Amino acid sequence: MFRKILFPTSGSPISEKIAKTIVNLLSDTNGAEITILYVLEVTPFHRSVSYQLEDKGIDPSKIALEDVKEILEKATKVFNEYNIPYNIRVEFGEPVEMILKIAKETNSDLMVVGFHGQSSLSDYLFKGNITTELINKTTCPIMVVK
Image 1 (cartoon, rainbow, N blue to C red):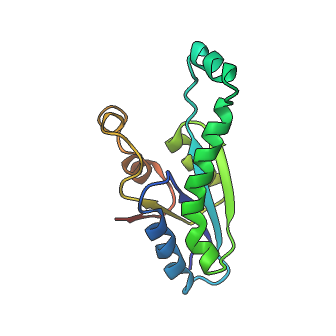
Image 2: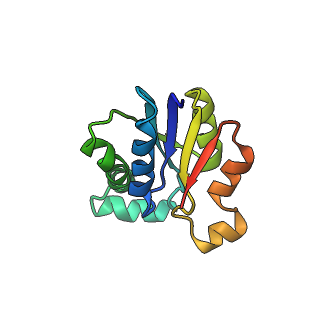
């Protein structure tokens, strides 16, 4: 039924549960294409912080990439255990806009997201919950895993 599944992840604790849900869907969907997406919302360091890090031999971009690597390891663990192929995309930008863009670009016919991601309380109060925004704005079916 579903041929192209988009799994945007924020590294939330339920990433594994979301992946298992997708695996269960795949028993009915032979040969589906899975795209795991992580959107890195770049918040520029204050220049003095960058200088201080660089003076200590620390590359700020490497710190961010290490976090991305850990997040993607959580998201891919289940697929690797079941030998299910997937594509990984890491994009930079505003999460909701980028997820919607990639869903359209990949012609996703299902998006599987978690009920709660890594949003802080202030993010939720001032920007809204990403899952809620995706539900309201996406044009493809969306499954929310709780």
